[in-house]
Length: 163
Length: 353
Length: 99
Image (cartoon, rainbow over all chains, first blue to last red):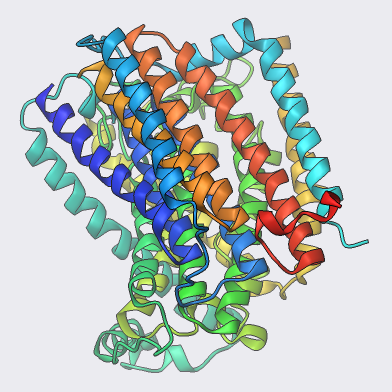
């Protein structure tokens, strides 16, 4: 389990650095590209946990579609090559305080509740199990999500139309 | 992959991983060059009566590809003054990386798999084909990075066109595969190959049961969508040289352009391999099992890849370019509805039989 | 592996996302920060699922992913609409209804 721990901390370091750059960088396109690093790191963590399917869904949905939509949105509005100085408002210190307060509370709660619980992986989750779960146990949520996606699709098309 | 990371790590995995990485790094450029030489240079010259590529070196223009290689490598590596240098340099690498990642799940024999292959039948990545399609979508990021970082309006327009096209055709590509997955009952490519090798057509096992016989609609959809994913004619608006110079590649020279070239033809190689594995039975020949299959498997797979690639390039050299709105209309109004109906029918027949 | 190392990572990412939502002035960047928070939630769910040795956490993460995709699609449509009408992507400029 040492190798897994080493891999975890490497990925975690990349994700933390990427996340900080996402919220601090002065270039919009760079922010979206740093977000790719965070999302790929998330997929890597899922694989470390033996949950392959959701990892690759993360890659195909987030990196393959959501980030591309972000880049599209940026490039269709304004994508300057050089850095901009007015991407942040003057709420840096309140924002930092709120973030620290929230993350600190969460961390305290986690440490308090699950102090040194270990993850014991016995077998990887097979795709078959997920299929069974989605189409047996969670069929209604699945259908609801499908309807939600359809509504979002139609809504986005209606809003983005020119006429 | 989860075998490697989360669970038991088999002894000697470091050496195995190193050898496998080297094999993949060698195979993709070789495959790309084979496709480029056979089809782009020779077949296109024959079909379109081109004289140039048939001339260098004497016999049949054998020197053309080597000459091209020398030209690319000794060219100056130019980065535009206004470009975002880091992103500009990273973009071709990301495009090539997605090709390399796609290749690792392709099985070439009962035990000849790059990723996994610990146990026969369930080796490799469990999500197999889904993994391949997921990492294939990484190239969109590379294309957008290349187009934006070039600080050239043609490059940006080409990149936006490419991204819209790749996203639109990702859907029929995935949906076309779903029919095969439903029929085989697994997403593991090795499992799909075994399902075809050991399948029967109404009790007759002479040729196994290649899924092209039952999933011919899926095969056609897959080929069209793969053609669009490769931005090959008739879907080459993103790199249309007469409208956009060369789209997102316009500012790239030398070996960075070579990266895009290898990415394009390597991806064609991988897509042909995926189509061969999903629909034509991959490395398998019916009733040929055991150790011998590990040796003839790669050859069989290569022959099938060349067969599928021939179809791809045949279409590439034969059809004129579509218009941008025709492209999107084809994806959203035709391919996606047809693939959904295909899934529906496949599911109904799977339940019925 | 400890369960907590995943949970603490997700707490950090969630905090970063909150900071981004508060300080960013470009709507697309605010959406990107929201994505950071959703990734943090997903890591939590998958980690809990792995602890319980079943796939339920993964299925919930799949639902979150789907909803995130829908949210981004609609969100970017709104951004484009605002940009088309106001020539600005700052959420603070969309205050016509304020009176």
